[in-house]
Amino acid sequence: MTSDTQPSGQNGHSGNGAPRAKVCVYCGANAGSSPLHLEAARELGRAMAANNIDLGLYHVPKRRLYSSTRIVLDNADMKTQNTVYGGGTVGLMGEVAKTLVSINGPDSVHGIIPEALVKYERDGTYQTTNKSNQVVPEESVYGRTTVVKDMHTRKKLMAEEVFAGGPGSGFIGLSGGFGTMEEIFETTTWNQLGIHSNGIVLLNINGYWDGIVQWLDKAVEEGFVKEANKNILVTSTTPEGALQALRDYKVADGIYQLKWESS
Image (cartoon, rainbow, N blue to C red; front, top):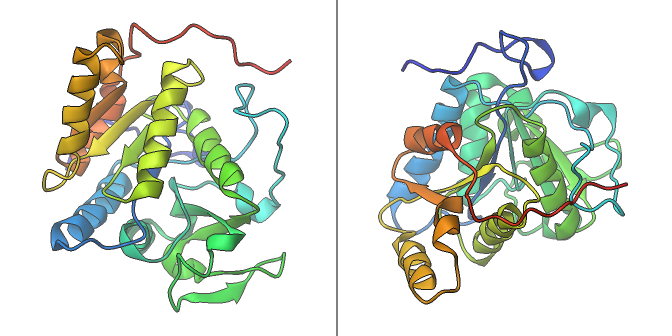
């Protein structure tokens, strides 16, 4: 395919020196009952590889979500990555990760997972131990993994890595359950509150997100969501379309103009 993303340079920058796009993927730790969902996860991994989607260097940007919490990662976790996700090796999340690693290598993926979830969102590939004596997935298969203390920290770090990206950075929601829904809606709420201006795209496979689209229409009709904010959350039926939607994303006219920068 032909990509409109510049070839990658050093330190996570594009060929023209600008930061490359960074994408966070929210998705289920289950595979789903239809093979279409797993295939969509693989296709998304291939599309991100083809488009040189980049996670970049981790840092705490000026626009931190929660200034009271700062996590310092070791040098191994500050390498350039290509995508960030929830760190599991099972279901759709594992499929996205290993597909991208198989094409672009282990430095192309950064998984972030709370310690309490390690035993639930893993398979037999959790065979190595990091510097903190934590068991993590096989890096050659799933990429680099950071184990954090809680869900709050996991979501904070995933979002901040997107905030550090260049044009086209944002969030993609594959099919998933309660956790996926919660992450998508919290990220959408942050956009409405003016905490960030990145796109959020639902990758609508086999009509999975049709109910959410209908709910959003109803919420606008009933006056609970402003018409001007309806397109904070957009949909696509293909991985390529989802990445393009992030590149084309425009900030909604109805977001709150609040100041969230820390002093």
